[in-house]
Length: 331
Image (cartoon, rainbow, N blue to C red; front, side):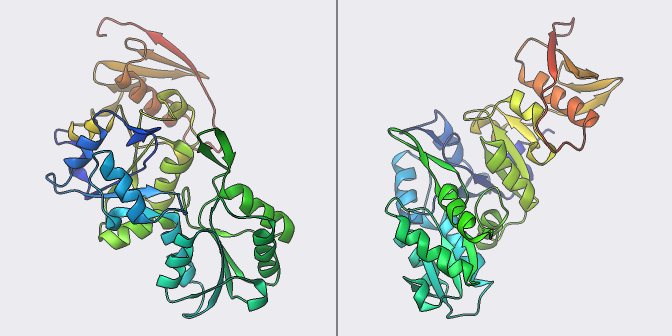
């Protein structure tokens, strides 16, 4: 590939935490990389499972970090959930909203009528995270769901990071309603497809590149939506976890940072007995991947992923091979 990686796509769908920022600070070079997309003729969307903050609020925070953002290119699971729900019930239907004011506003924007109680006989329940939710709110949701209401969850993240540590996320609250009712919701957010397809529909794009730092949400979600994916190595997952990933969570590209979007992606090709990338070579023997390259070399990891995935094409659970680095004459 001689053209920049991003040159093959009409949009970049970027995750936030671990891609644009880490904690309160922007990842070095990330805002600048995103600023360059407009000049490259590539649209930008931010894809987040957050359902408690409005797109305008998120965009304001991103601009403070130096990233180009407006409410129109921030797509959260509240919006995706409300749009998904609007396709499942008749216009004007009553909807029990178990979540934030942002979620309520999104439901109303879809021409649906938010109601506060199962006694209002809602046609549907939509459930999203809000720190003020309590037992009574979950009970109302359970009453309506058990009575047969359509049930949509904005996302099923089991935990969320807080300043004091890890706290229960929307998935934990959804699980409580599921346990009480024996039902499962339709899910809009990552790793399901609707959040990604919502962004594509609004932007009018057909070939987005989903860029994220997590295999189980960003990469799996992009795969579920049928889009190309790139794992950026500035957050949670690593080349080693990508190598071991189950088939649905395997990224199409491994990039060190967002700046690499503007560089040609090195070709990974089949060779006699293995796969090569640059000067690196990877071969598979049983449960071992041998990589001929300096230890930790990214091209070595790219070749290793190609070789291991070729030898194990359909894997439903993560499986870590033994990795052996060998410094060869060409390394």
